[in-house]
Length: 388
Ligand SMILES: Cc1ncc(COP(=O)(O)O)c(C=O)c1O
Image (cartoon, rainbow, N blue to C red; front, side, top):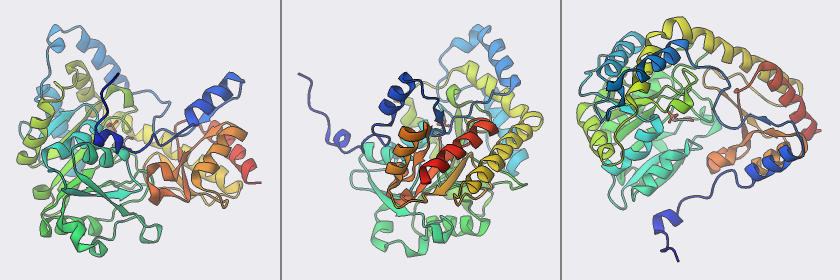
């Protein structure tokens, strides 16, 4: 007999895509051609600079040592150079940044450094699920706050219940936003920073999609905003910018005291990301100017092809200014989970039900631009058939 699981474990939400992987396996077994647009994991190659950097790094025995929190000095230098060039933000390489095993690592472990039992955190709904999971596993109380479509998917900070704000220690914001694709105007970010100063909140700013932006839009860093440095930790990822989801590399940047807290928590959980991957990621960052614009153009072309094809089928799809997703209203009267189940069962297309990202996502489905324009068009035609 195994021991009983913890109350915290029991309180974790059910797997969001209940039943979908089984259905997929069955259909694949029957020979159905599945188009999977669920995860934000593109079919594109990483930059050659990263691949060659890793090949060189594995030959160097020094790369096989424990990385620890500090990681590779050259990785830190590359991040510092990039933050300065991209956002005009100066960062201390030793104290104000921390390499992460993917940004999820930092996002999910951070609450262990801040929350006592019963302390709360304000979490966007719909949103990236590790905000909620990290807070919950650390013993905290996730307070889900809506991202209303009629407020451009921005949290109405002034309208939050004062008691909820008073017992919260952390506010999570993610713009460009997954899943809604919304952007945060600079004025809104200023307001958020002031709000966090006024209420002693830590602002966790998840900037995983900062580089996947279209039509000339350049998402800011929260560290560019007046007062942002004192209250924020910002999270960056190699996953989406460089098609390197599996390499598991990201970083946290912000005030040295906040970084030190996350570093201490992590020192009890892991021993850092492989130094060879850090070396390769430094090369990826340094190849940004030669490589990233063409990759973004690929996503922009996919976006345009998918939006046009969905519109032609009668969906109210709009072209997002950033991220690798479309956030589309479910055009039928059914729940998003039922719509997505039918999409898979009847047409072999996997799209993400909005409700799997939180109750606030009900009424929408998410399309990830993770495959070719032709496959996205094919998926749109198939989806058109299930709405008749
Ligand atoms: C909003 C958001 N934040 C963070 C991440 C995590 O990225 P990674 O851990 O791969 O760096 C993702 C991945 O999907 C995401 O959508």
